[in-house]
Image (cartoon, rainbow, N blue to C red; front, side):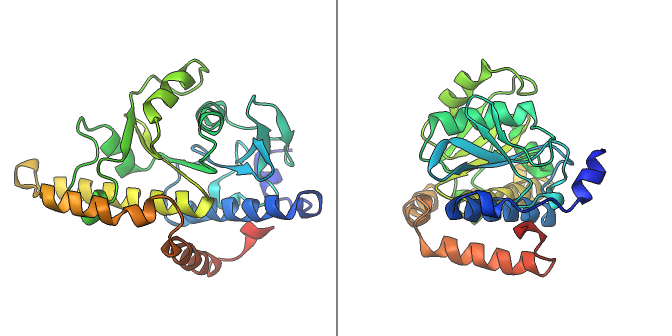
Length: 264
């Protein structure tokens, strides 16, 4: 059966054979995929979002290899363990090796991060290709200034030995720019990781737009402003702020105007 046929097939819901907690995470992760498609953050069938399975911290959920982001649903996510063993693959499509290498490394090393989201957007990749990375050019960027870790490009992430260097470069950050590659955020929940990615993508959009007029006339935020925003952002950085839930709820209202297929 072809991938397109599989994607169109109404598969049986897995809701009855997973815990209520896992189903909730599945729905949120599927919503994150659909939102990324809505915002045009996708790179065809490539890039990956993942989330830990509650109560099974060595297992995580990730997209089936071959589905577009707007085809992802709670029931067609693949469950895999940290060592790469497929636990549940409703469509039999498997997963992308590059997604496994990056996401399993982070889930193994950083138990505090329950969700990991990675994109290859035009502006995110463009900023990743700049020597100085994310610049203090906007309010959006200042929310991340001093929090970003960077990893040098080594080729397509197919080799397990890159995981050691990936994790060393990530350190204790949850904001990661993979040079010449793209953006990655982690969070204590899907909602938190998505909020971080949403703002980071916007910061990159603004940076590329500002640079279109030439770098000589760019206006950087003052050090005083950078320091002030660093203090202000602490309320949002750990994922506990009520504003994160409000942000997510608004996103879901926006998504559901397009339909609720992600829930199935």
